[in-house]
Structures are given as structure tokens and as C-alpha cells.
Image (cartoon, rainbow, N blue to C red):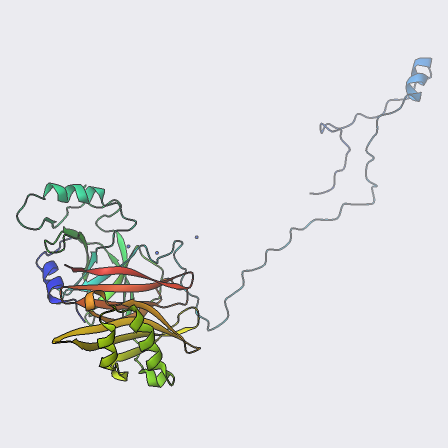
Length: 370
């Protein structure tokens, strides 16, 4: 699976170059620690008698000669518990959450067979240096771009550097990578800032897209594409509940035409996943409807629950199509994030559904549009 032709062409025309823990005392002593002097013979003079009758300072008696203090032995430190046999120890998770900040997407260039991250969501990134550099190029007739950045270039976003660690999560698993180069562009059609990170050659069987994480994340995650189900395979009446949950979210003028379309089983695909709140499947609807002489797409994303309820999530952008791509548990919390394409006639985006307090939220990972 590859990105739309216009998106890939934009980046392939800009080649790049080179991211995750005592023994007992035998003599008495005063509080200063000095030994007590030996007792002097008692004198018979009045002064001596008076002195002898005066209260004497307390003296700590010596311990009996036949008793010794019990020997003290430090308690033995127990050996660390060994892991049970034949049980794999999971990799430690990063100290900071990966979702949603720090999660991006990489596309595989079919010609150069290299992975390139295309960042369009700059939440949490200081782009001040890059903005100033691009502003200086704004008088050019062509779209402003920088490619490549030299190592240590002052125009890079704060914190980005050649050789910095990244992690790719593909259908085959996680791969640790390093940034080999950077590029930046502001396409004229959308005027959106794109920042590209070259992550080097792909494995021989790699294809499509990958999740890209800043840093060498300790993760065993990989992209998973389960086999889809039809609504009838889930439960009786599932199709009707899905359509009725989608219809109120469509444009009011389009609803009558959608009802006439009779969305069928073949127009809905359900993908099982590990979702919170009793959600069992993510559903993707894609059908064609007719309004007069015009055809238009009806598409959306929903979740089904084990109790039979249906939860609406999103309608495809600008009467486009939402298409499932993969599931991935990025942060190792046992819940699946959902990756899907949102494509229309003048744009394409790769979206990620992640979970915040058990509720689904969306993050745009890659793409461009007018």
C-alpha cells in the first residue's frame, strides 16, 4: 500500500542525504569515651570522710566476666527471585507516554526503497528556527523548501539532529533507526509545512507505511491487519444499527439520498481489536450514493460493543473514503490504536485513533490536502 501519487511525487523530487531506570566492651567509659580512673584508697581524715559520704557519680558497672555479649550477624540479603521458567520477560516501556506526542508516520519510497517520515503535526515541537529559515525563502517563485539540511544546521527544529535515534514499527515488528537527513517544504497548493526525516534503506520485504517514534523505544509492537468480518457475522441486526448510528452524522441534505442507497453488508467491514469500554470491533463504512446526476461517497468510522450497541466516531473528510490500514499497540498498554486512511479527491491523510481515559481521539500522522 502506498501514498497517493501526488503526495509521493512531492517527496521523491526532493531526495534526502546523510527517535524509548560489635564485640562487647571490656572497660567502662564516661560519655566522652575516656576510661574511668582506678579508685584511690579511702583516707581517714575528716575531709576524706566527708568526701566519702557525698553522693557518688553513677558508674557503669563492668559486665560480669563470665558473660559475653551475643554475637550479632547481619541478616542475609535474599537472592533476587528468578523469573519463572519458560516465561518471556517483556521489554521495559519508555518512561514517558508515546501517545499521542512523538508518534508520526513514515512512507516507503517505491523508487529509492528508503523510509521517510513526513511530519505535518508539530504539536510539542519548537519550529521557530525552521519557520525563520523558510520565511527567508518566501520570495522565491517556487514553493519554499530546504533540502538537505547540513549537520548542525541552525534551521532545524529544536532538538532534531543528524544521527538522532528513531524507532520504526512495521508489519514485521520494531526496528531501531537513526536520522540520516532532513528536508522541509511548504507545498503551494496547501501552504502546509512538511518536515521530512530520512530513516535510511528499508528491509527487502517492507511495504506501505510504518509508525515512526522519536527515540529508541523499548517496544515489541508491530502493525497488525486482522481479517475483516461482515456485520451479519457479528450479530443479527448489526448492519441496521451501524447505518442508523451513521446517518444522523451526515449532512442533512444527503441523508434522504443515503437512505435510498440501501447500504448493504458488502459496504461495511468490521475489524476485531482490543479496545476499552466493551468495544469489540472497529467498523468502516464505504458506499456510493446518488444525488440527482451526481454520485458521492458515504463513509465513516464507528465502534461496535459486546452488548450490541454502536458508537459513532467520525465521518470521512469532504465526502471522501475512510479505509482501514492496521492496528498497533504502540505503548504496550494492551489496547490497540487504529490506523486508517482518509482520502478524498484533493487530499489524503493517515489518521490514528488512540485512547484517552477510555475515549477515542484522533491524531493526524501524515498527508496533505487543498
